[in-house]
Amino acid sequence: MSTNITETFDYIIVGAGSAGCVLANRLTEDPTTSVLLLETGGSDRSIFIQMPTALSIPMNSKKYAWQFHSQPEPFLNNREMHCPRGKVLGGSSSINGMVYVRGHARDFDEWQTHGAENWDYQHCLPYFKKAEDWAFGNDDYRSEGGLLAVNNGNNMQNPLYQAFIDAGIDAGYLATEDYNGYQQEGFGAMHMTVKKGVRWSTANAYLRPAMQRDNLTVKTGIQVTKVLLEGKRAIGVELVEGNAKTQVLVNKEVILSAGPIGSPHILQLSGIGSTKTLSAAGIKTKHELPGVGENLQDHLEFYFQYECKQPITLNSQLGPLSKLAIGVRWILFKTGLGATNHFESCGFIRSKEGIEWPDLQYHFLPAAMRYDGKSAFDGHGFQLHIGHNKPKSRGSVKIQNDDPLNPPQIQFNYLQHEDDIEAFRACVRLSREIIAQPAMDTYRGSEIQPGCNVVTDVQIDAFVRETVESAYHPCGTCRMGAADDEMAVIDPQMLVRGLHGLRIVDSSVFPTVPNGNLNGPTMMVAERAADIIKQQVLPATDVAVYKDPEWQQHQRSNQAKRDVTC
Picture (cartoon, rainbow, N blue to C red):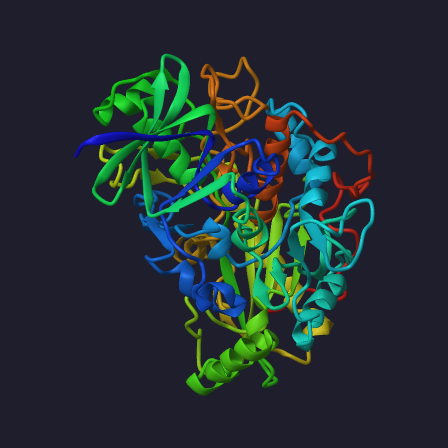
C-alpha cells in the first residue's frame, strides 16, 4: 500500500464525536483557520438515530457503534462486558441515551485536586452554560442561547415518574428542582438532549452549522492509524481511506477526540505510551508516557424491576402495531412516545454517611425491559436503573499489536475495590426502601429483580456479579494532571506531556469519573478546550453549591415514612 501526502490544515481533529464536533464548530468560527475533521463511521441520518425512543438500535448496531468487549472481568464471574462506542457522525452522542447530567460540582473540584489546575467547578460552569440552550430559561447555573438543546422530555406525563420522586421524598431524601443547578442531591425531573422531538447530538447541534463554513473539511470512512511525529512535535496523521494510505499534515495541532478507547489506542499505535506495553505489542517507543491507557473507569448499573398493578407502563407499547403507531406519529409530528428517551425522573443520593456528595444515581423507567428493548416479563412493570457513580476500581486499555484494525485489550477490573462492592449492596437495600414507600403503594407489585430471596451480603454480591451491566461511561485513559505527575498524559492545557502540537480532548482526559452521565461533561471539556486553544478563556464564576451540612453524620436528610419490606 503506497503512502501519499495530501493537504495541510491548521488543525486535524480525529473523531467526530461528543468532543470533536464541538471543537470543529468552535475552531472554525475564525474564518482564517482551516480544520479537517476525520471520522471512521458515516452518516447519522438514520431514523433510528434521530428518533429518541429508538436508542437501543444504534447502540447495538455494528454500523453505528464499535462493539467493543472487555477481557473476562475477574471480579464479575469472568464475564466479557459490552462497551459500545459511537462510530458515526456525532460519535457516542448519536447512540447514547440522551440523558443530560453535568455531574456534581465537587466532581470537578476533585479534578483540580488531581492536578487539573483551573478545572474546578467554578471554571467549568461557564462552559456548561456556554454550550446550553436550556428550555426553561436563564439563572446563575443554566443558560439559553447555546447550541445544545436541553429539556425534560414529555414533562413526566406518566404518573409513575412523579410517584418515584414522591417515593424518594417519602424515604427521607430531598427534592431537587434542578440537579444540574444549585442542588444535585435529591429526586426530580431528568433532563435530556432532545430538540423538538429529535435527538440533539453534537452532529446536529454543532457539526451541521459548522459544515456550512468553507474552512471546515469533514471526511468519513477514515481510519487514523497513527500520529506523525518529527522529533517531539506532531506534524500530522497517517490514515487509511479505502485501500489508500495517506498522510495529512498540520500547521498547528493534531487533536485526538477518538474517545476513551480510541485516543489511547492511537497514541500507542504512534509509539506514545508505556514502553512495556508497546514492546509487548511489537511497537517501538517514540515517547515514553506510562499513563497512556491506564486509569480506565466506568459506571456499572443494574435494573431493579417491579410488577406494576396498573396498566400504564410502556410494556403495553412493545407490540409491532404500537411501535408502528409511535413511529408514524414521530415521523409526522415529532411528538409522543417516540420523542423521549423515557428516562424522565431520577435521583442522586449518598450510599452512606461520611460521603460528601452523591455517589448513587437512579434513572427511572416506566417499563420493565432491557437496553436491547426486550421485555423482562409478560405484563406491566417498571424499573430503576441504579448504579454506583464514584468507583475506586481502575482498569486499562492496551494495544495488542501494530495492526490498527485490531481492537485494543480492554480490562475494567469492575468491583476490584471493596468500597465498590459495599456501594452496590447499598444500591439494593436503599432501592427497596424507596419503592416500599407510600407514594408507590398504588403501583407497586411484586419484585421481579433481584427478588425477595436476595437479602444477605453474599446473595447481593452474587446477584450483582451476575447481572450488573456497564452504563457505557468509560473515561480516564489519558488523564489530565500536574507537570510532576508521571502518570498524567496531558497537562491542564490539554497538551500531551513532553510533546508539541498534540492535544487530547474527550472523556479520556477526565482524572476521575463524574457523578452522572458523561456526554454533558465531555461537551463542556471541548468547549473550554476550544477557548484554551484560541486563548480566550471565560472568567470563573462564584456561585453557591448545596452540600448537606451534616453529611458526616447521616446518609439522608430526613427519616423514612416506612421501614423497608420485601
